[in-house]
Image (cartoon, rainbow, N blue to C red; front, side, top):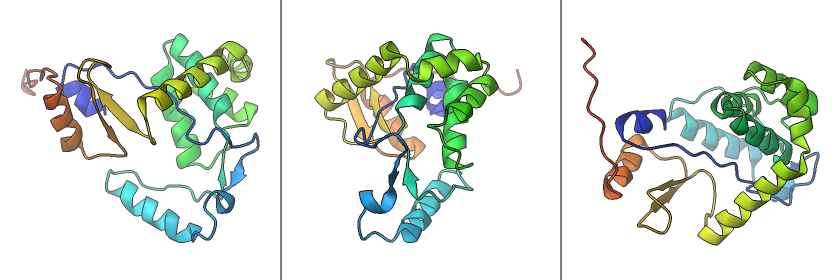
Length: 192
């Protein structure tokens, strides 16, 4: 996404989305979510797919975490201008390091690493106002028909915006940016 924002006059507005809001605190066994599924084969397919995007060393998960606390801390990070750093730290913690992103100690450490006050992050994890923002995003996503994550919406909602779901190659997103009329930025001369 960074390349797309660099190449086009676009603003990235990341919104956290609870794909499985029914997941209880403490998480849910993936075998319960995907009964009869060979979880090792599923992980192998995911790893192969991710490697096509340059993402390697994915952790093997057996549980789906409840992400409400992490998303609330992400909203706090947004308010503090540290969303990108926290989001990247949380994604790496979950997907690469298999850390428990529900755990307050883990969230506080991730927040500190992203330049946030760890005590404020602990409070943010269960802050009713931040959790209400997570709920509002879920309602808006449902209203818009967002079926999964990631979903990329380019353009202004209600004014010809277009969306694509799932991890996509750069060219798919660039074509979508062209379709919604996003202006291309002038290439930067590496010699200057």
